[in-house]
Image 1 (cartoon, one colour):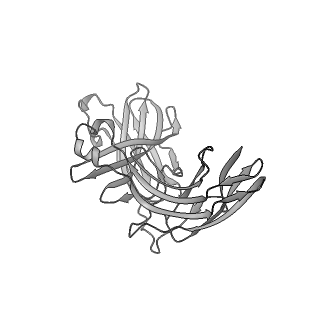
Image 2: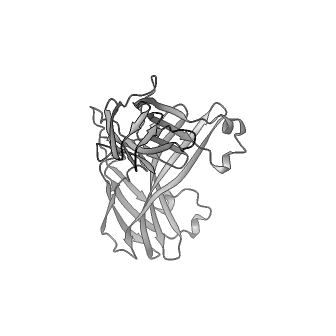
Image 3: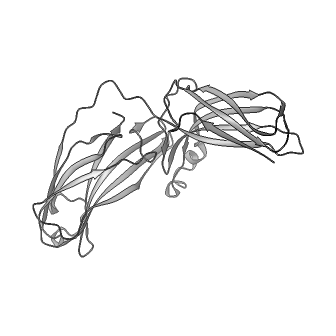
Length: 296
């Protein structure tokens, strides 16, 4: 009986390009353990996937989607030999450097775009014994730019006339909702903030919600597939709110499910905010705001 585990020295597992990733490979065994070498590999990849609706449309593109390798490095931790009974910790240090001239993108867990970095340890053993393997994900973040983006508040008004994709505008109840977003240039480390006010509404209001969306685009010469999916939805008001009352807008960007807005030749990751007002008769009033996220 034997087991293998990767333990990183940095508790939060967050690293930047050029950092030295340090830790130990802990091998636990009952009795003396003979092995044919222990290796450690560092991998960073961008995995792209087409949505079901696009598979038939972009047949050639679907076959051409391959993982984009950002980091690829292998290290020999121990040569073939024997390990004693109990727990043995084998230290390692491996530099976080991109493969070739590719930039390192931040860790991001999406639906059709995934950017992930892993350490994989493997102990080779004799034919009669199964090789031991272990995997640990670590997080890559970019360093903040030296120049900060300019913060510009965005004032908005939502009325029946401002709505798009409305077939029978005459049936839409009269209402006026106005507010301000503190900035659409957002820092991933700070909350998305602003204020909203219901000036008047003919129909009573059931709920007001804030929706965070990811817009993922995958593509090449054959075509592009663009998909919008929800990351999170939070309620900022319940029931028929007081008219003329300022309602605070406050949303934290969830770690790993968001990243700085990204655009490359093969894929894009962008974000949007929806302000959703649900009336008592379950009619939805939605206003969309594209935002740009950066690590500021």
